[in-house]
Amino acid sequence: MGNEYDTRSFSMVEAEEQIIERVKRGESSAFSALYTAYVGKIYRFIALKVSSVQEAEDLTHEVFLKALSNIRKYEKRGASFTSWLYEIARNKVIDHYRTKKVNVGLEVIDAEIVSEDVPLTQTLDNEFQNERVRQAILALPEEYQTVLILRFTEDLSPKEIAKIVGKSEGSIRVTQHRALERLKQLLK
Amino acid sequence: MNERDILKQLQALKVLLPDEEFCRRSLSSILGAHAIKAQSRWGVSRGIFEMFTHASLIGAVMLFIAVIVGALNYIPSQSPFALTGANVRGLIAEATDIDIAIDLPELAYDIPTISLPPAVKTPAVTAGESTPTVLSEASADEIDRLLQELSK
Figure 1 (tube, rainbow over the protein chains, first blue to last red):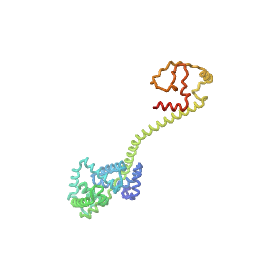
Figure 2 (cartoon, rainbow over the protein chains, first blue to last red; figure 1 turned 120 degrees about the horizontal axis):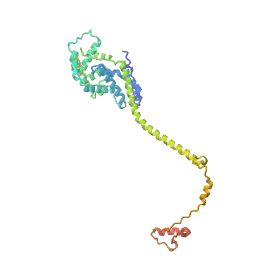
Figure 3 (cartoon, rainbow over the protein chains, first blue to last red; figure 1 turned 135 degrees about the vertical axis):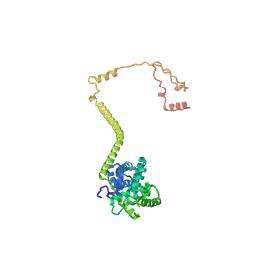
Figure 4 (tube, chains in turn purple, blue; figure 1 turned 60 degrees about the horizontal axis):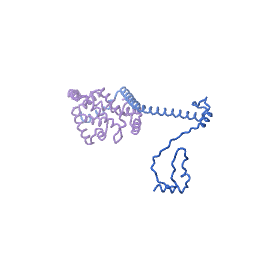
């Protein structure tokens, strides 16, 4: 856990706004602070939605590249900078699947990994458990994935998720409930 | 797995972190790409800037030359354009002695005749005759009166 790109290395909202302003003024070196603060969150969000580390790294890189190129378009209108990054990341993953047409592949993963044949006992190490949950998440529809990851792994409020997904808070609560039910079924 | 276990598992996924080497490479690549992009954008504006710089430089050089030429003309002895072998005073004296007489042929004026009162009728202008002096001799009152009549 001694990773310098852990999300906890950046917390002050005021400092964040100042850094964003510096980047907007053309000080691209200030972007390093934003990258260091958020790369962990964005990488995790993407890694839980794709099947390989390579894809997760490539998409994470693209997200931050796009963020830097479009940072002038970012305006703090109720949504935080993190929400803006999650929105870019989500669109990148959707585009990734659209262009690669890997939906069929995900079905295969679902059948293989989350089958009843997988031995699940208390002796299984955490890494295996994590991988099993990750694979189960991968088998869910995209919106269910997004809501579950942001709500329970990233601890975002339904309000924040609603802004990222572009839906109402109530709709997010319904999706969250359905996604949990579906995940429960997959992990039985 | 009950709901509580699932939530615990979802929380446990926080351990998923990117490779530090990847982060370093990715960040330097992003900053590098951005710098190149900014440089190429600056390239166009730099071209325009240089154009203006060159134009103003040429302007400044021209102004400098004009000032130098002006200053040299102001001090004739220092002027590179001064003819050292020429006798300037002699040339001026010679020029004033030149008497040029030009005979002008009779000029025909195509001006409609204005009927003027006899006192101010202009005599015909012929070569060799003196200039009419009617107006020059007329008093200020007469001129006013004539102007009023003409304007009627």
